[in-house]
Image (cartoon, rainbow, N blue to C red; front, side, top):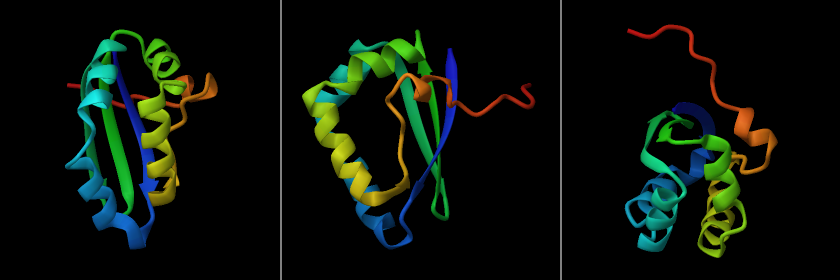
Length: 103
């Protein structure tokens, strides 16, 4: 399945956000893949961040990562940089952007 999300980086933290994503911990990458993600791409337009995630089951991905220590640490770091965060709760699993058109 493919999920699209929107988050928002704080205007004064863009460089720090991008720097953090050049150094995503290997343990977190491994955990994301083990939870079923095959790809995760983030685009930025100004302060808007658009994520596209390819995974087996998005709800399962979130559930497996939500309380994992490496992800909890990463999300705490991201919370300092973001105005709109990625929601790892059950509600977040249905927060994907609706598809309007596909080729």
